[in-house]
Length: 110
Image (cartoon, rainbow, N blue to C red; front, side, top):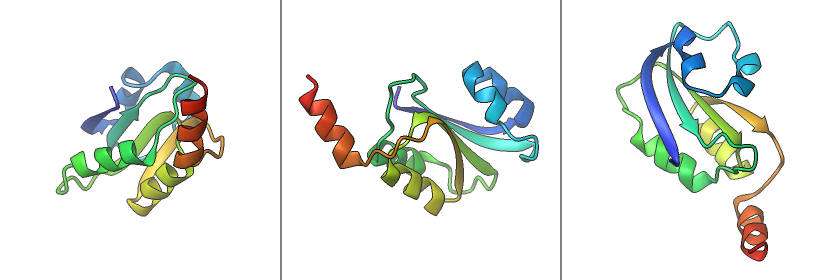
């Protein structure tokens, strides 16, 4: 699974979709209805901008609900895409990877 989009979900149901480690980061001020984009949530997963772009292109353009992305760690470029598209995000880590640097390190660790 690269990502999963759950449209028009009630805020209280988000807890059924994401791992418990995200629960403390869900602000109570969010609107009652949201669209959730769930990316890989394992501690060592890094979400690249290409994956985020694919998710953005998969969103229903007529859906005007607030968008929230959950993932383990987003690259700098992925975060920029989320922000440009007015998508809030919650990450388990904010290590400052770039797409290029992460790919380089991953390819050299094999």
